[in-house]
Amino acid sequence: MSKITYEDFAKVEMRVGKIIQVDDFDRAQNPPYKVKIDFGPDVEIKQSCVQAKCEYTKKELLDRQVICVINIPPKNIAGFMSEVLILGVPAKDGSLSLLEPSRKPARIGGTVY
Image (cartoon, rainbow, N blue to C red):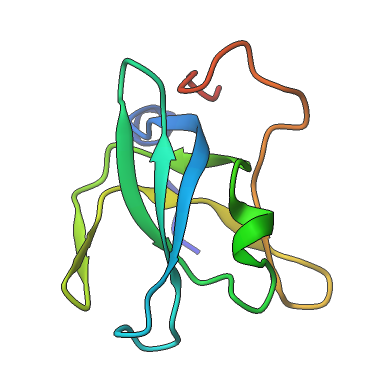
């Protein structure tokens, strides 16, 4: 594992967003969901993909608050431009566990420290 400096980490902008739309996306390998995430008035709505079909239903994702990196370049995934990176970690059983605030944030789109 390579180390980064605090200055490198300080460049990563993480925000809390609310998933407002979830759609199937069967064109990609290991089909993910396409999602729209509302980050509030500062960032507005961004789109992304999340490979979580085994762990979450569309209904479970809708209205869920998630933590995302918002200042990475867009990535083309099977013709779909993913604008933010939704953060998750492996759960004990090896499945995906999305990162979400443990308490309701003061506002959607707030910076994560």
